[in-house]
Length: 64
Image (cartoon, rainbow, N blue to C red):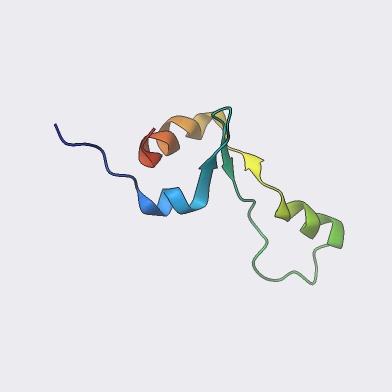
């Protein structure tokens, strides 16, 4: 059976840490920033750990 190919869209959006967690970017940072507080916008810069419900799907698409 051939090797699984990495889904390139997924590979660009997620990264795996040294301990094996999957990190994702936060949403709501792209536009209409005037009504969002500076503190809230700063929080969008940080990465977040992927939800446990999505780990299996994303890791399969990343090629384990």
